[in-house]
Image (cartoon, rainbow, N blue to C red; front, top):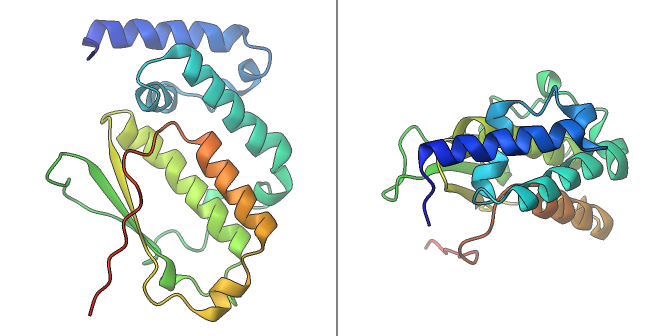
Length: 186
């Protein structure tokens, strides 16, 4: 069931009031601005309980559990931003969704650590939540693995792969709609 505009505003007000009294989330209200919180609400289909749970995971994983992985990096110093590593298409797809393309082959592991790649992805998702998810209920991510090198593959440890999966699956306010599809070009 699609919510009306005034119902969405009511849900945002309800969520903001719950954040103010939440023992963990209230300390982060400065980064949980309306656009960001609305992105989480939209991603969780305006279910306030699920949104709170996702925001709790977001804060816990980023500030406690994986703090050592994330803390050294700042968006202002992310060397992959502004490169061919990620591109947002200027037009929406035929379903009206925003589209981002990650070009994994644009990453050089001898110049940029895998940790910085992961954190750059998180920075990009944070901004996408504010800009795109808050205004649209669907977002498409295409990861282009064409040209992945052995040097790139050998730096991915099982522990880091698990951390990345946990960060992306538990911190992001969305649901996978379709299975990953693979395309082979000749």
